[in-house]
Amino acid sequence: MLRRNRDALRMPAQEGKTPPIVSLIAGGVAGGVEATATYPFEFAKTRVQLRTQSSASTSKNPFLVVSQVFRNEGARALYKGCSTLVVGSIAKDGVRFLSFDVIKKAFADPETGVMSPLRNLIAGMCTGVVASTFAVTPSERIKTALIDDARDAKRFRSSFHTVRIIYQEHGFLGMYHGYAGTTLKQAGATAFRMGTYNILKDFERSRDIEQSTITNFVNGAVAGIVTTYATQPFDVVKTRSQGAKGASTVDAFRSVLADDGVKGFWRD
Image (cartoon, rainbow, N blue to C red):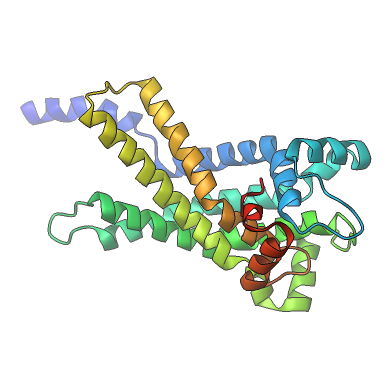
């Protein structure tokens, strides 16, 4: 009787639990909406990071880039490559969702099943590597090539056409130009974000600072800013590698130094 009553008490909690597949779909939709809403600035950032053409100058201010493209090419041009980013974002969430539990189990303590902060950090970085390999690098390659091509040559008619041309000219590995930069950015983002956040939390505990919604928001914001600046060089090299013609990571690195010096690695 008592056990039946305990089971009855548990049932509402179980019924109220969101199924993992629902969380995955909801996260994918939310990511797609976010990517679409903010894409003009992603487009501008990519154009700023690409190598300036000799025949045309590109403003280093993303807001001016958005304004110029809107005036000269229309609003539709600001969404060149957007569908690829949305699909890539959903695929990335799916890969992370499927791979994290497997990776987490591999790094968990074999006796207790508990993950230490360091093991959790390494598991997150490994998940970033897997996501880069199966989703992020190919989608970023297509998106960047479309944005670069639209500046001048205009050879690529769609995402599928871009894939076909890249495959014809560079083979399968052509889809993985910029893999090193993309992977370092994905793995580094996890490390810097979690590392910064934990350092802030430890500092606040040592100073008896009360934890609140505002404190957590500030911690997250600071961690996000640190992560962005720390991984920006990887993002710039990745973008240079993934232009319409493609380039090796070494060539992309050298081109950034040649064009702008060290400060060029922090182009928005």
